[in-house]
Length: 111
Length: 303
Image (tube, each protein chain N blue to C red):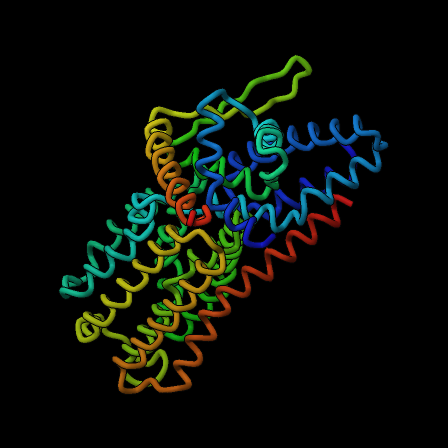
Protein backbone atom coordinates (compact mmCIF):
# COMPACT_ATOMS: atom_id res chain seq x y z
CA UNK A 1 0.00 0.00 0.00
CA UNK A 2 2.89 2.35 0.81
CA UNK A 3 4.45 1.73 -2.61
CA UNK A 4 1.09 2.33 -4.31
CA UNK A 5 0.84 5.73 -2.59
CA UNK A 6 4.31 6.63 -3.81
CA UNK A 7 3.32 5.69 -7.38
CA UNK A 8 0.18 7.78 -7.08
CA UNK A 9 2.10 10.81 -5.79
CA UNK A 10 4.47 10.72 -8.76
CA UNK A 11 1.59 10.47 -11.22
CA UNK A 12 -0.74 13.08 -9.76
CA UNK A 13 0.50 15.97 -11.90
CA UNK A 14 -0.10 13.99 -15.07
CA UNK A 15 -3.49 12.78 -13.87
CA UNK A 16 -4.62 16.32 -13.10
CA UNK A 17 -3.46 17.65 -16.46
CA UNK A 18 -5.15 14.78 -18.32
CA UNK A 19 -8.41 15.29 -16.45
CA UNK A 20 -8.52 19.07 -16.71
CA UNK A 21 -7.67 18.99 -20.40
CA UNK A 22 -11.13 17.53 -20.92
CA UNK A 23 -13.09 20.01 -18.81
CA UNK A 24 -12.56 22.49 -15.97
CA UNK A 25 -13.25 21.03 -12.54
CA UNK A 26 -13.13 21.94 -8.86
CA UNK A 27 -11.22 20.05 -6.20
CA UNK A 28 -13.95 17.82 -4.80
CA UNK A 29 -15.14 16.98 -8.33
CA UNK A 30 -11.58 16.03 -9.32
CA UNK A 31 -11.29 13.58 -6.40
CA UNK A 32 -14.62 11.92 -7.26
CA UNK A 33 -13.84 11.83 -11.00
CA UNK A 34 -10.43 10.21 -10.47
CA UNK A 35 -11.91 7.67 -8.09
CA UNK A 36 -14.81 6.89 -10.40
CA UNK A 37 -12.87 6.58 -13.66
CA UNK A 38 -10.12 4.48 -12.08
CA UNK A 39 -12.73 2.21 -10.48
CA UNK A 40 -11.48 3.06 -7.02
CA UNK A 41 -7.74 2.78 -7.73
CA UNK A 42 -6.92 6.51 -7.50
CA UNK A 43 -8.17 7.77 -4.16
CA UNK A 44 -6.45 11.05 -3.41
CA UNK A 45 -6.66 12.83 -0.11
CA UNK A 46 -7.04 16.58 0.19
CA UNK A 47 -3.48 16.85 1.48
CA UNK A 48 -2.24 15.45 -1.83
CA UNK A 49 -4.70 17.04 -4.23
CA UNK A 50 -4.76 20.69 -3.19
CA UNK A 51 -0.98 21.14 -2.87
CA UNK A 52 -0.66 19.58 -6.36
CA UNK A 53 -3.32 21.89 -7.82
CA UNK A 54 -1.73 24.96 -6.23
CA UNK A 55 1.72 23.92 -7.36
CA UNK A 56 0.59 23.43 -10.95
CA UNK A 57 -1.14 26.80 -10.81
CA UNK A 58 2.00 28.53 -9.53
CA UNK A 59 4.08 27.15 -12.40
CA UNK A 60 1.46 28.20 -14.93
CA UNK A 61 0.16 24.82 -16.07
CA UNK A 62 -3.26 25.46 -14.56
CA UNK A 63 -5.23 28.56 -13.76
CA UNK A 64 -7.83 28.83 -11.04
CA UNK A 65 -11.00 30.87 -11.20
CA UNK A 66 -13.82 31.45 -8.74
CA UNK A 67 -17.42 30.76 -9.66
CA UNK A 68 -20.32 31.88 -7.49
CA UNK A 69 -23.07 29.30 -7.13
CA UNK A 70 -26.79 30.20 -6.88
CA UNK A 71 -26.64 29.65 -3.10
CA UNK A 72 -23.90 32.28 -2.83
CA UNK A 73 -21.14 29.76 -2.18
CA UNK A 74 -17.91 30.10 -4.12
CA UNK A 75 -16.10 27.27 -5.86
CA UNK A 76 -12.64 27.37 -7.35
CA UNK A 77 -12.50 25.77 -10.77
CA UNK A 78 -9.22 24.82 -12.40
CA UNK A 79 -8.53 25.25 -16.10
CA UNK A 80 -5.59 23.96 -18.07
CA UNK A 81 -3.46 26.63 -19.77
CA UNK A 82 -1.72 26.50 -23.15
CA UNK A 83 1.53 25.79 -21.34
CA UNK A 84 -0.24 22.99 -19.51
CA UNK A 85 -1.52 21.51 -22.78
CA UNK A 86 1.96 21.49 -24.31
CA UNK A 87 3.40 19.80 -21.20
CA UNK A 88 0.51 17.34 -21.35
CA UNK A 89 1.51 16.30 -24.88
CA UNK A 90 5.03 15.49 -23.61
CA UNK A 91 3.73 13.64 -20.57
CA UNK A 92 1.28 11.61 -22.62
CA UNK A 93 4.13 10.46 -24.87
CA UNK A 94 6.31 9.66 -21.84
CA UNK A 95 3.58 7.60 -20.19
CA UNK A 96 2.84 5.70 -23.41
CA UNK A 97 6.53 4.84 -23.83
CA UNK A 98 6.67 3.85 -20.15
CA UNK A 99 3.66 1.56 -20.35
CA UNK A 100 4.92 -0.02 -23.58
CA UNK A 101 8.29 -0.77 -21.97
CA UNK A 102 6.65 -2.08 -18.77
CA UNK A 103 4.39 -4.39 -20.78
CA UNK A 104 7.41 -5.85 -22.52
CA UNK A 105 8.88 -6.77 -19.16
CA UNK A 106 5.71 -7.79 -17.34
CA UNK A 107 4.32 -9.96 -20.12
CA UNK A 108 5.39 -13.59 -19.63
CA UNK A 109 7.91 -14.72 -22.21
CA UNK A 110 6.24 -16.98 -24.77
CA UNK A 111 8.17 -20.16 -25.32
CA UNK B 1 -20.88 25.14 9.66
CA UNK B 2 -20.50 22.95 12.75
CA UNK B 3 -18.20 24.19 15.51
CA UNK B 4 -15.85 21.25 15.11
CA UNK B 5 -15.29 22.01 11.44
CA UNK B 6 -14.94 25.74 12.09
CA UNK B 7 -12.31 24.94 14.69
CA UNK B 8 -10.56 22.60 12.24
CA UNK B 9 -10.45 25.30 9.54
CA UNK B 10 -9.27 27.90 12.07
CA UNK B 11 -6.52 25.52 13.17
CA UNK B 12 -5.59 25.01 9.53
CA UNK B 13 -5.45 28.77 8.93
CA UNK B 14 -3.21 29.27 11.99
CA UNK B 15 -0.74 26.75 10.62
CA UNK B 16 -0.69 27.91 7.00
CA UNK B 17 1.66 30.87 7.58
CA UNK B 18 1.08 32.35 4.14
CA UNK B 19 0.05 35.79 2.92
CA UNK B 20 -3.39 36.66 4.32
CA UNK B 21 -4.89 36.92 0.81
CA UNK B 22 -3.64 33.43 -0.10
CA UNK B 23 -4.84 32.03 3.22
CA UNK B 24 -8.32 33.45 2.69
CA UNK B 25 -8.59 31.85 -0.76
CA UNK B 26 -7.31 28.49 0.46
CA UNK B 27 -9.73 28.41 3.40
CA UNK B 28 -12.67 29.41 1.15
CA UNK B 29 -11.73 26.62 -1.27
CA UNK B 30 -11.49 24.05 1.52
CA UNK B 31 -14.77 25.24 3.07
CA UNK B 32 -16.50 24.51 -0.24
CA UNK B 33 -14.79 21.13 -0.38
CA UNK B 34 -15.87 20.30 3.16
CA UNK B 35 -19.48 21.27 2.45
CA UNK B 36 -19.54 19.00 -0.61
CA UNK B 37 -18.07 16.16 1.45
CA UNK B 38 -20.61 16.70 4.25
CA UNK B 39 -23.43 16.63 1.70
CA UNK B 40 -22.15 13.31 0.34
CA UNK B 41 -21.91 11.78 3.82
CA UNK B 42 -25.40 12.94 4.77
CA UNK B 43 -26.79 11.53 1.54
CA UNK B 44 -25.12 8.24 2.49
CA UNK B 45 -27.28 8.22 5.64
CA UNK B 46 -25.13 9.80 8.33
CA UNK B 47 -26.53 12.33 10.74
CA UNK B 48 -25.11 15.85 10.77
CA UNK B 49 -22.90 15.14 13.79
CA UNK B 50 -21.68 11.81 12.38
CA UNK B 51 -20.96 13.43 9.01
CA UNK B 52 -18.95 16.22 10.65
CA UNK B 53 -16.96 13.75 12.74
CA UNK B 54 -16.29 11.53 9.73
CA UNK B 55 -15.36 14.50 7.58
CA UNK B 56 -12.82 15.81 10.08
CA UNK B 57 -11.38 12.29 10.38
CA UNK B 58 -11.04 11.95 6.63
CA UNK B 59 -9.33 15.32 6.29
CA UNK B 60 -6.65 14.23 8.71
CA UNK B 61 -4.46 16.45 10.86
CA UNK B 62 -5.05 20.16 10.20
CA UNK B 63 -1.39 20.81 10.91
CA UNK B 64 -0.26 18.20 8.39
CA UNK B 65 -2.67 19.48 5.71
CA UNK B 66 -1.52 23.05 6.36
CA UNK B 67 2.10 22.00 6.05
CA UNK B 68 1.49 20.25 2.74
CA UNK B 69 -0.33 23.27 1.34
CA UNK B 70 2.36 25.59 2.77
CA UNK B 71 5.07 23.66 0.90
CA UNK B 72 3.20 24.19 -2.37
CA UNK B 73 3.21 27.96 -1.75
CA UNK B 74 6.38 28.57 0.23
CA UNK B 75 8.94 28.55 -2.54
CA UNK B 76 9.72 32.04 -3.76
CA UNK B 77 10.97 32.88 -7.22
CA UNK B 78 14.62 33.61 -8.02
CA UNK B 79 13.63 37.25 -8.43
CA UNK B 80 12.22 37.32 -4.89
CA UNK B 81 15.34 35.54 -3.63
CA UNK B 82 17.56 38.18 -5.25
CA UNK B 83 15.44 41.03 -3.89
CA UNK B 84 15.53 39.59 -0.38
CA UNK B 85 19.30 39.01 -0.43
CA UNK B 86 20.09 42.46 -1.93
CA UNK B 87 20.72 44.28 1.39
CA UNK B 88 23.21 41.61 2.46
CA UNK B 89 24.89 41.65 -0.97
CA UNK B 90 25.09 45.43 -0.79
CA UNK B 91 26.91 45.32 2.55
CA UNK B 92 29.15 42.50 1.29
CA UNK B 93 30.20 44.70 -1.65
CA UNK B 94 30.61 47.67 0.67
CA UNK B 95 33.08 45.96 2.97
CA UNK B 96 34.93 43.47 0.82
CA UNK B 97 36.71 45.89 -1.52
CA UNK B 98 37.10 48.38 1.35
CA UNK B 99 34.88 51.01 -0.18
CA UNK B 100 33.75 52.17 3.22
CA UNK B 101 35.51 55.51 3.67
CA UNK B 102 33.92 57.95 6.05
CA UNK B 103 30.36 57.80 7.29
CA UNK B 104 28.90 60.91 5.63
CA UNK B 105 26.93 59.02 2.96
CA UNK B 106 25.55 56.40 5.37
CA UNK B 107 22.38 58.43 6.12
CA UNK B 108 21.61 58.42 2.37
CA UNK B 109 21.93 54.62 2.23
CA UNK B 110 19.86 54.04 5.36
CA UNK B 111 17.31 56.57 4.13
CA UNK B 112 16.95 54.49 0.93
CA UNK B 113 16.58 51.34 2.99
CA UNK B 114 13.84 52.92 5.09
CA UNK B 115 12.00 54.08 1.95
CA UNK B 116 12.06 50.52 0.54
CA UNK B 117 10.93 49.14 3.90
CA UNK B 118 8.01 51.56 4.14
CA UNK B 119 6.96 50.57 0.62
CA UNK B 120 7.03 46.85 1.49
CA UNK B 121 5.36 47.37 4.90
CA UNK B 122 2.33 49.07 3.35
CA UNK B 123 2.13 46.65 0.38
CA UNK B 124 1.36 43.36 2.09
CA UNK B 125 4.64 42.76 3.96
CA UNK B 126 6.09 40.29 1.41
CA UNK B 127 8.87 37.91 2.48
CA UNK B 128 11.61 39.97 0.78
CA UNK B 129 10.80 42.89 3.10
CA UNK B 130 12.19 41.31 6.28
CA UNK B 131 15.92 41.37 5.52
CA UNK B 132 15.51 45.05 4.52
CA UNK B 133 13.57 45.68 7.71
CA UNK B 134 16.40 44.30 9.80
CA UNK B 135 18.88 46.72 8.26
CA UNK B 136 16.58 49.70 8.58
CA UNK B 137 16.54 49.12 12.35
CA UNK B 138 20.34 49.24 12.46
CA UNK B 139 20.75 53.01 12.78
CA UNK B 140 18.48 52.87 15.81
CA UNK B 141 20.58 50.16 17.47
CA UNK B 142 23.95 51.64 16.44
CA UNK B 143 22.94 55.05 17.79
CA UNK B 144 22.15 53.37 21.09
CA UNK B 145 25.57 51.69 21.20
CA UNK B 146 27.36 54.95 20.47
CA UNK B 147 25.44 56.65 23.27
CA UNK B 148 27.59 54.60 25.62
CA UNK B 149 30.60 56.66 24.50
CA UNK B 150 29.07 59.98 25.55
CA UNK B 151 30.46 61.77 28.63
CA UNK B 152 29.12 60.00 31.68
CA UNK B 153 26.49 62.49 32.78
CA UNK B 154 24.87 62.79 29.35
CA UNK B 155 25.11 59.08 28.64
CA UNK B 156 22.83 58.08 31.54
CA UNK B 157 20.21 60.70 30.77
CA UNK B 158 20.09 59.74 27.10
CA UNK B 159 20.05 56.00 27.82
CA UNK B 160 17.12 56.32 30.25
CA UNK B 161 15.13 58.13 27.56
CA UNK B 162 16.43 56.38 24.44
CA UNK B 163 16.57 52.72 25.47
CA UNK B 164 12.86 52.30 26.40
CA UNK B 165 11.82 53.96 23.12
CA UNK B 166 14.11 51.73 21.07
CA UNK B 167 12.99 48.60 22.92
CA UNK B 168 9.35 49.51 22.31
CA UNK B 169 10.01 50.02 18.59
CA UNK B 170 11.94 46.75 18.26
CA UNK B 171 9.27 44.80 20.16
CA UNK B 172 6.47 46.30 18.09
CA UNK B 173 8.10 45.46 14.78
CA UNK B 174 9.24 42.02 15.94
CA UNK B 175 5.75 41.10 17.16
CA UNK B 176 4.23 42.29 13.87
CA UNK B 177 6.72 40.05 12.05
CA UNK B 178 5.99 37.12 14.38
CA UNK B 179 2.25 37.44 13.79
CA UNK B 180 2.87 37.00 10.06
CA UNK B 181 5.35 34.13 10.61
CA UNK B 182 7.97 33.80 13.34
CA UNK B 183 10.49 32.70 10.72
CA UNK B 184 10.25 36.18 9.16
CA UNK B 185 11.23 37.65 12.49
CA UNK B 186 14.29 35.38 12.56
CA UNK B 187 15.06 36.44 8.97
CA UNK B 188 14.83 40.08 10.00
CA UNK B 189 17.20 39.61 12.93
CA UNK B 190 19.62 37.40 10.99
CA UNK B 191 22.51 39.89 10.66
CA UNK B 192 22.43 41.01 14.31
CA UNK B 193 24.60 38.28 15.88
CA UNK B 194 27.35 38.71 13.29
CA UNK B 195 27.19 42.51 13.63
CA UNK B 196 27.53 42.19 17.39
CA UNK B 197 30.44 39.83 16.81
CA UNK B 198 32.19 42.22 14.42
CA UNK B 199 31.62 45.10 16.83
CA UNK B 200 33.29 43.11 19.61
CA UNK B 201 36.11 42.00 17.30
CA UNK B 202 36.86 45.59 16.31
CA UNK B 203 36.99 46.93 19.85
CA UNK B 204 40.48 48.21 20.60
CA UNK B 205 40.68 47.28 24.25
CA UNK B 206 37.97 45.93 26.52
CA UNK B 207 34.26 46.25 25.84
CA UNK B 208 33.19 49.78 24.93
CA UNK B 209 36.58 51.32 25.69
CA UNK B 210 37.29 52.40 22.13
CA UNK B 211 36.02 51.96 18.60
CA UNK B 212 37.56 53.32 15.42
CA UNK B 213 36.06 53.27 11.95
CA UNK B 214 39.50 52.52 10.50
CA UNK B 215 39.38 49.09 12.16
CA UNK B 216 36.60 48.22 9.68
CA UNK B 217 39.18 48.19 6.88
CA UNK B 218 41.31 45.61 8.72
CA UNK B 219 38.35 43.24 8.91
CA UNK B 220 36.84 44.26 5.56
CA UNK B 221 37.20 41.01 3.57
CA UNK B 222 35.96 38.88 6.49
CA UNK B 223 33.00 41.19 7.10
CA UNK B 224 32.22 41.16 3.38
CA UNK B 225 32.37 37.38 3.33
CA UNK B 226 30.04 37.10 6.31
CA UNK B 227 27.47 39.31 4.59
CA UNK B 228 27.82 37.18 1.45
CA UNK B 229 27.02 34.12 3.56
CA UNK B 230 23.93 35.93 4.85
CA UNK B 231 22.91 36.81 1.28
CA UNK B 232 23.22 33.16 0.18
CA UNK B 233 21.29 32.06 3.28
CA UNK B 234 18.42 34.42 2.54
CA UNK B 235 18.26 33.32 -1.11
CA UNK B 236 18.20 29.67 0.03
CA UNK B 237 15.52 30.52 2.61
CA UNK B 238 13.29 31.99 -0.11
CA UNK B 239 13.84 29.09 -2.50
CA UNK B 240 13.49 26.21 -0.03
CA UNK B 241 10.01 24.71 0.41
CA UNK B 242 10.23 22.94 3.72
CA UNK B 243 10.20 24.89 6.98
CA UNK B 244 12.77 22.71 8.70
CA UNK B 245 15.21 23.33 5.84
CA UNK B 246 14.62 27.09 6.13
CA UNK B 247 15.39 26.87 9.86
CA UNK B 248 18.49 24.79 9.13
CA UNK B 249 19.69 27.44 6.66
CA UNK B 250 19.35 30.16 9.31
CA UNK B 251 21.16 28.10 11.95
CA UNK B 252 23.96 27.16 9.55
CA UNK B 253 24.53 30.77 8.55
CA UNK B 254 24.69 31.76 12.22
CA UNK B 255 27.33 29.12 12.90
CA UNK B 256 29.34 30.07 9.81
CA UNK B 257 29.34 33.81 10.48
CA UNK B 258 30.17 33.30 14.17
CA UNK B 259 33.10 31.11 13.10
CA UNK B 260 34.30 33.83 10.73
CA UNK B 261 34.21 36.43 13.51
CA UNK B 262 36.26 34.22 15.83
CA UNK B 263 38.77 33.18 13.16
CA UNK B 264 39.42 36.78 12.10
CA UNK B 265 39.88 38.16 15.60
CA UNK B 266 42.88 37.41 17.74
CA UNK B 267 41.19 38.47 20.97
CA UNK B 268 37.86 36.61 20.75
CA UNK B 269 37.85 32.96 21.73
CA UNK B 270 35.57 30.06 22.60
CA UNK B 271 33.39 31.98 25.05
CA UNK B 272 32.72 34.68 22.47
CA UNK B 273 31.83 31.99 19.91
CA UNK B 274 29.43 30.34 22.36
CA UNK B 275 27.93 33.73 23.19
CA UNK B 276 27.34 34.55 19.53
CA UNK B 277 25.81 31.13 18.84
CA UNK B 278 23.50 31.51 21.84
CA UNK B 279 22.52 34.98 20.61
CA UNK B 280 21.75 33.53 17.17
CA UNK B 281 19.71 30.68 18.66
CA UNK B 282 17.79 33.12 20.87
CA UNK B 283 16.77 35.07 17.77
CA UNK B 284 15.28 31.82 16.46
CA UNK B 285 13.78 30.42 19.65
CA UNK B 286 12.35 33.61 21.16
CA UNK B 287 10.17 34.44 18.11
CA UNK B 288 9.01 30.79 17.96
CA UNK B 289 8.06 30.84 21.66
CA UNK B 290 6.37 34.25 21.33
CA UNK B 291 4.42 32.95 18.32
CA UNK B 292 3.18 30.01 20.36
CA UNK B 293 2.21 32.31 23.22
CA UNK B 294 0.37 34.74 20.94
CA UNK B 295 -1.57 31.92 19.27
CA UNK B 296 -2.42 30.34 22.61
CA UNK B 297 -3.64 33.69 23.87
CA UNK B 298 -5.75 34.22 20.73
CA UNK B 299 -7.30 30.75 21.11
CA UNK B 300 -8.20 31.45 24.72
CA UNK B 301 -9.79 34.74 23.71
CA UNK B 302 -11.77 32.98 20.95
CA UNK B 303 -12.98 30.31 23.43
